[in-house]
Image 1 (cartoon, one colour):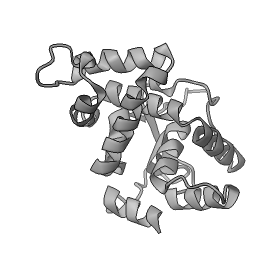
Image 2 (tube, one colour):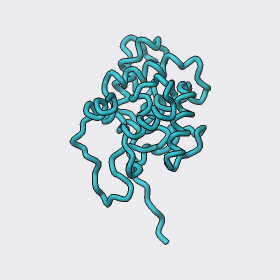
Image 3 (tube, rainbow, N blue to C red):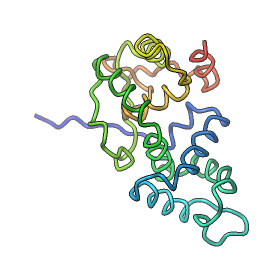
Image 4 (cartoon, one colour):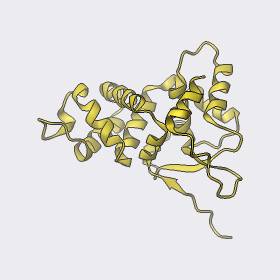
Length: 195
């Protein structure tokens, strides 16, 4: 029996689904939390920062203050899959309650997930097949029903869904090479989620 091949997109492909201001917020959150992160996450960001981020006035960009690194890191996040993976892993690590809530929600909805504590940044990227019958709006509605007291925004829920699910919505499972409607821009997706 032939092995089933998995198709992956590099981690920075998530940028197609992120507004610029939200990307900055995710990077800011990860960089400001560096001192509280476990060494594995901190070292990964520092390594990728040295390789991919250029901060004027600093030979080693990892030594620049977090506030100065935010914009150059967000710019590099758009181009470097390794940096994007390191930042997303750190961001998810800082969102322990949301991570558990989204994990529980997706599990209840029948998503096939890796264990919650797996460092997904070590994966080759995101799978391209999205579960049939699911979209960001449906997941957000399910989250709001399950956690009615939560004040978490739709962007964070969607990003945590992408991260824990290890997938981006390019193709829907069970539909033969049929692309998800790509006429929806990230702005359109964000607007739908905000409703």
